[in-house]
Length: 187
Image (cartoon, one colour):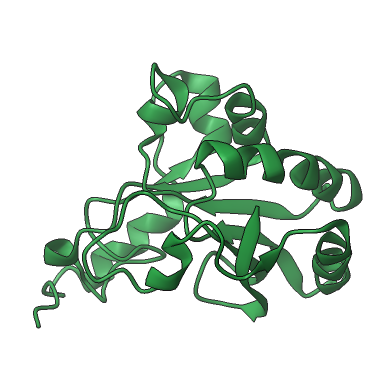
């Protein structure tokens, strides 16, 4: 797996100050994607154990709330296989820090009969705190949405969802209501 970027102090892609890993490779090709260069699986640099250690060093501060996975597409099967051992080590070193993951796939695709439900998927989901799912839809883009780009995307509380057996939205998205007058952005 390759990665396109690492942000050391990201406040836009999850709650708190986070370290964000932008993986390479995505088959969604959403219209007006903000990170189009990461569609290519060979874009960027190899995701080596040295890169892991750099990320762990960035995370080893009290002010860092957790790790965010974006892309590209973290849940592409080949990316899942590369991320799983990294996430296991992250959880071992930082059990109190959260993991957020942005994916264009739906939670139901990740847990059902779909090409992205691999031998790694369930274990990855078991380590996530928040999953932002659904493809970015340019026509549904709104600046008033919290931690997502378009209104079709869901911010899912993964532990609550796994416990209940049905999708539970994260309570933090209720703050979207204060932006209820926000209109979709049009070009």
